[in-house]
Image (cartoon, rainbow, N blue to C red; front, side, top):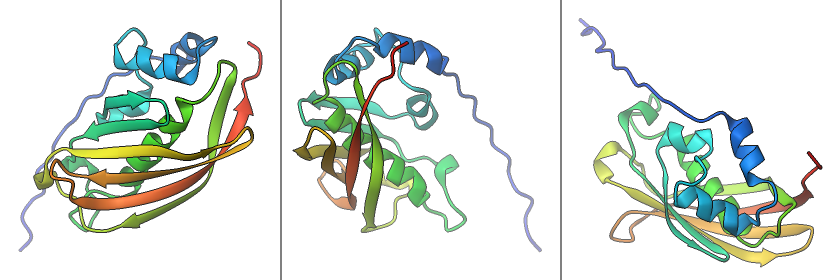
Length: 169
């Protein structure tokens, strides 16, 4: 006999992304991320959804932290690889964003992730550490590592990013 499922609930609030887009205009990538980190601009909705925080914000290097949670689980009983990929992709993108001048953005055009060990809510906070490998004028490459407080590796990744001019408002 299968026991009845126990239902849980989660409420999420976020700021309208149009506000974020307007607030980002005229700022360099580093200025924008610093404004998010100090709270003068609300974070993009994905930050609220997954609860990640900026720990380190330097040119070409960003560290995000998040707490793995049960609501992120796949049917395998571990945090879904897509969630971990979002954290790695975000750290790599933000690391590159710190190098961008005002009026320029980027998009990920290629992403490779290696999962080293499973993640559950029992592992505690994890850090996604993103670093720029090459910041070209048209294409960039980045890398990231997902580690716990002791530096134990859970996943690592690389990405290729396309530099995109922002269209006038």
